[in-house]
Each structure stands twice: as structure tokens, then as C-alpha cells.
Length: 545
Image 1 (cartoon, rainbow, N blue to C red):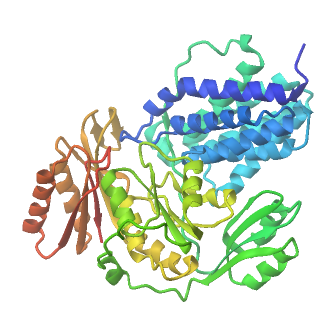
Image 2 (image 1 turned 180 degrees about the vertical axis):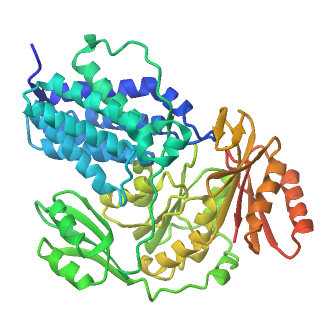
Image 3 (image 1 turned 120 degrees about the vertical axis):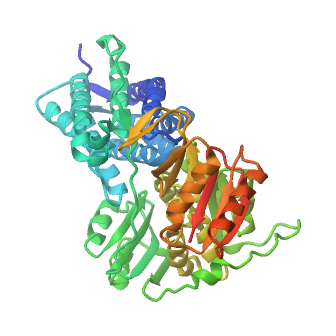
């Protein structure tokens, strides 16, 4: 007999089965990432996100369908790692919203919940990119709705969704030139297909999906966040309190009056962030929805900075041990990996350093915990990695504190942002300077290849030493110092007076000092700083400004 309804027990079974399927194949997804450097890979990030969802689902001991779905959404958001994990959590968030308060639903309602998940995920990304997990999940949901309208039972609807997802996955190279050039499909989309496949296995194990299949070749595609158009000069941020707050309606209305829009939260508390040319109109509309709190408005046109002076200011020595300091207005959370980098960020004023970076993206929950440990009402977060920005942006909806994310994409950008931070000022008055300081820094990295690959005209073999400029392959060789020299020559062609080098695990102080001596001989007059970063994965991290 076909399964006609989805209830709490069955949803629990499907979620577990999807998590098991993705866990079983995450290694293949990670290993086939076409970019050959060590990375926080999509398969691992999605699997860890689902593992957190399963833990929360079991700890909640929920019975009803709506309660189970809510637990999954909550756990996936708290455990979200990387862009792919955050988007997956938003798919579950919308799915749960459609099932709120329900004991069981029909196949048609399940299809509708899948579609609501897609809408929620698209809204969570400022500039959605087609050819990613977003496209694959949308095509799956559309096919599920069509099958449900034709009278399909639950199994038929999920099977149709899975088939449509697989077909959409094969089309992703036609939508993203980076995939087309590499001849691969999108990794996040592949992960989503595996989850749907797991759902089908959980619904009916004997469908034959357990047979061996050749894994698709995948590439991780990073979503990026760009700064807002100055056409909307007022950066406006606040919370709305109330009951049954219409977040979707608020979002749709405010979208007409600005950009860089974020409207997230629950029925009792909604956080709003928008760049607008008329904050009064925004506040007037939102106050009619419920009481406003923690209102911050800054005029981005009037912000100014003295970046060079701030960047060269020597930080004060750390305070001696003593009693716990009193609560302060603004705190800082930075993400970094390595004892040396931890010390550097703390010496510059960071209250908390979350361990993580390229090889292991921290979860949203880890960042939330760090934010909550700081005795400050406002907290600035520096992700320092492009694949952590989206997770950091979810933190504000999970804490009562005001959270501001400066979208730093590398450790040097984070250090530059810290040097531009003015702790005596409110967070809203220093964010612009921090963001501009980060963008002014060029970042180079020396790492190694973990697999054979071909990037454009460059053949890469496992074990090759690679030089990356702003995350893109620039040079390769067989010696970290030689590659670092080649990379620096390319970086300094565009100018730059200040060079900072952070050397990592496996590099001796003498080797790093030799690189500084070479710079002094080849580029006299440049100011060079050398720090023991202790970072894994990267022999050297270099900044030029």
C-alpha cells in the first residue's frame, strides 16, 4: 500500500536516512572538489549540519510532525557549517514553517513544504546564484508539486523530486561558467540529491537505490556577499518584538525601499537590516508591526577613516591577569586557526577567537556561543573566510545581542579590520571603516595540492606547492619559499608599501626570516612584518597594502 501521509515518526526516519546517505558519500564529494587545495568541503559541511539536526531532533523528544520539523530546522541552523550548510538549514527552516502545528500531512502538503523551503533559502541569500543547490532544490520542489497535483502518493512525489533534482544537477554547468569550464556539476546540488535519495531509502529501503553508483564530479561554488550600493546611504538595523510577526510581509515591503535586506527571526522577534534612503519610512512601517528595539542608523556617506595611521598603530600590550572586566558596549569575535593567529587577534582586541578556517568551518552554534560569552550588548564578528560569512550572518537571529558581521574573507583582511576598529565608538560607527580596511588588503597564500587536477592551462599534481592570490591559483612549484617569492613578485607588481607575512606549521623561523631577507634585497624601502601564525594547511599567509 502506498504511503499517504507524513507524520512525525516518518519524518524522523527520513531525516536520519538522508543524513546517513550523505555521511556515507561525503568523502567522495569532498575528494572530487576540482579545486585541489585543502578546503572546508561541501560534503563534510552538509553532513555535519545534518548531524547537528539529528542530535537536536532526538534531544527534543518531539512527537508531532510540526515539532519534529522545528527541531530539525533549529538543529540544522545551529550546526550549519559553510555556505552549503547554511542554505541547507534554510531549506529545512521553510519546510518546518509549512508544517507548523500539524500532526500529519498529505503528499501535496509535503510538496508545498519543499517549495516553502526553497523560497526561504532564496531569501536568505542576498544575490542568489543559479546553478547551485538553490536551483537544484527549486527544480525538485516544482516537480514534486506537479506530481502531487496529478494525484501522486508520498513515495511517488519524493521519487519525482529526486529524479528532477538529478536532472537539474546535470544542467548546473550550463548555468555557471566556472562549472562549465571545469566540466563538473555543483557540489551543493549533489549533496541535496543524496539527501533526497536517502529520504527515498528511508521511505522504502527495497527500492534498489542501494546499488553502487559512480559519484558525479563536483566543484564547490562559493556564494559571495558584495557591499551595498551607496545609492542607499542609511544603514538601518533594529529588532521588532511582538506576536505573530509577518516576517515575509515585512521583507516584501522593505525590499521596495532599499537593498542589503535581511529580515530573519521567529514570530516573536524579527531582526531587520536594510540600506535605505529613508530610514524614517522604514521605521514608521515597522513600528506598526510591533515595538522596536536596538535601533541603529548610520549615514555611510559621512563615515571616514584614517586607515594608514590606524594600520600602523602598535597595539597596546595585553592587560595583566585580574578580575573579570565590566560589561562593555562592543565586543569582537574573530575566526582563525593557529596559536599565533589566536594571540594576534586577541592582542588587537578580539574578545573571542573561534578556532576554524579553511579546513574546518565552525558551526553557527560555535559562533553564537562565542558571541554570548562576551559581556557586551553589541558584538562584531570577523569570519575571515569566504565560506564562513553566511554562517556568521545567521548568528544575529539566534541571540538577543546586536550582531554585526564585517565580511572579511581572509585572515589579513580580518587583521586590517581589527586595526581600523575604534573601540571607544559604537559598533555602527566603526563598521564602515573596518570593512574598507579589509577590502584594501591583498591576500596571498602558499599551500599544497591534495589531489591531481587541471586548472585552466595549469596541470597540478598532488603534493605540488601552490600560490594563491585572492583565492585564485597564481603560481606553483615544489618549494614553499620559492613559491612565496614568485607570489610576492606578482602581488608587488600592483604596488604596495606594507607587507605582512604569517608563517605556519612546518615552517621554521629561519626559513621565514630568509624570505624577509630576500624582500629586503629585492624590494628595498618596503616595510615588512613577520609573525609566527602557527596556522595549519598554509605554509605562508601574506598581505600587501
